[in-house]
Image 1 (cartoon, rainbow, N blue to C red):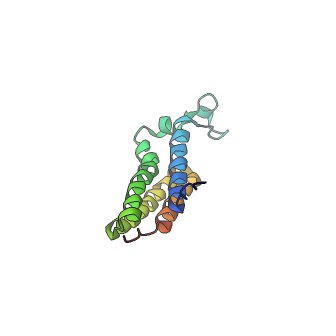
Image 2 (image 1 turned 45 degrees about the horizontal axis):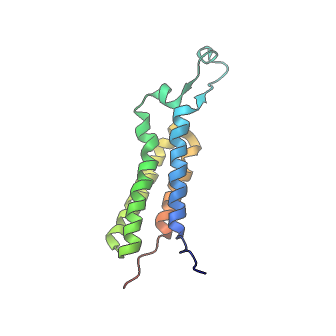
Image 3 (image 1 turned 90 degrees about the vertical axis):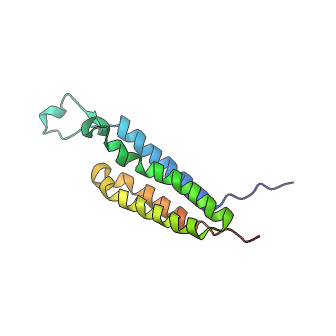
Length: 132
């Protein structure tokens, strides 16, 4: 019986970051902010994050999604071609995700934290490709 190839750990971390980031985008577009009970404007109206702040907030909300997609390609190059440049680029992309997390904490709260943590975990666990 032939055994399926084992999927590397960095793929799972990157896939989890991709799913979590997509969930953040969906939540920003669909979940209504209830506001506080003392605010009279919130008694009859509730808005999503995109409606409240504007469509430009999608740049910040979609950043972890785009970063995890870019990181998937960079880590693939790192693990298949033994590329030291790709390793360096992976850490730059991971640090960029941490930088975009800071304003994301202000806008979205703690919901944004798992995405950069999973991105850094993917960059840390991806092995350098084997020499042929």
